[in-house]
Image 1 (cartoon, rainbow, N blue to C red):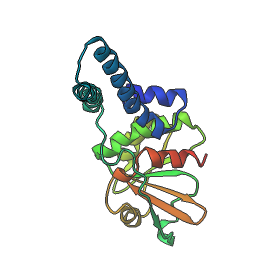
Image 2: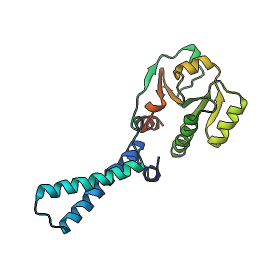
Image 3: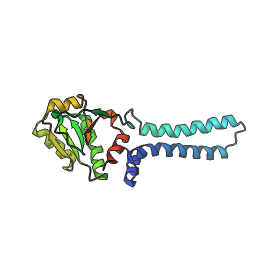
Image 4: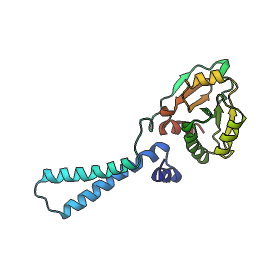
Length: 199
């Protein structure tokens, strides 16, 4: 998340609203400035004036989009409900599980979001489960998370890897008997809002 989105998060807006508001405000700003400019410049043809205002407004939006592009999974909440089996007993209820592997750059990127989530909601338990790792993997994750987020090795590498469909990071949350799992590109701001709503 960029400076503007983080600012809205700090104020207390939801993740979805914090992601959306800068785009909305840029459009409003572009439209306001465009109307002001073209009131000063006299253009007799109304259709030409409307095109000029639309073009200038759009240029504000695209300038911000170039600074902060929207990716496919940014607003997603594509959870898959998974049957809980004995092999997945190590997944505990009411905590956000981040399934990761050693040396994964996308797993490393997820730490920033998870730390922000934990800071906003200290009650949320976040746990990194590392597949196919060793003690040095735990040390690395613990160092990156600052000790506020639990990091441990998977007890059943095969089952946890299968749960993530070998896509890392993946996210899992169990509430009651329901186990939900998200791939990285399916765990956007709407999914984070859903997790926050449970605490």
